[in-house]
Amino acid sequence: MEKLFLHVCCGPCASYPLEFFQIERPSLNLELWFHNPNIHPKAEFNRRRDSLAFLALHHGLKVDFSSPYEPEKFMAELMKNPAPPERCRTCYALRFEAAAAEAAARGHQAFGTTLAFSRRQKHDLIMEEGGRAAKKHGLEFYYEDWRPGWHRGHEIARELGLYRQNYCGCIFSEFER
Ligand code: SF4
Image (cartoon, rainbow, N blue to C red; front, side):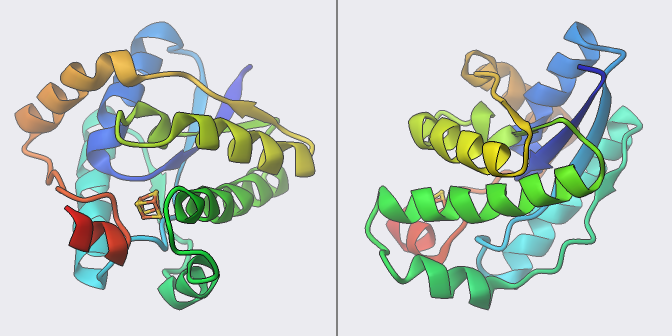
């Protein structure tokens, strides 16, 4: 694999994966893409976006932030079944479908996600929905279990002074924290 389209959810979750790629796969051409309509409210979206921009700058990388923030479309789908874990499945499916379509349009053969860093995410559903979206667009889903780097990732985020959120992203998770 020479290049990878990486869906990035936030700075803290990207901290360890970016270090991992730098050490383990220094020649890999990474394309970073921020697409997270699940984040509520807009001010929180902006804080996570800015924190990721700072991290990427630290690594000399660019992030594509051009994907529009459309929480109303996201919520319309989520509300069809808002009970967990199904709402998280929908949340992953929506973000991965968008990521896979974008990756295919840009000529990639694989896409992955920094959600695979978090101990709080549902990795079985990430693998299922990532695989489904990838297959639909003729891609591979790149899954790396980055959870062993949990402490290192948070150490990097602390060292760089990144904003570290205390809820997953959607309005439900904001109330559940
Ligand atoms: S809890 Fe997190 S993964 Fe689940 S729906 Fe909300 S934002 Fe998405």
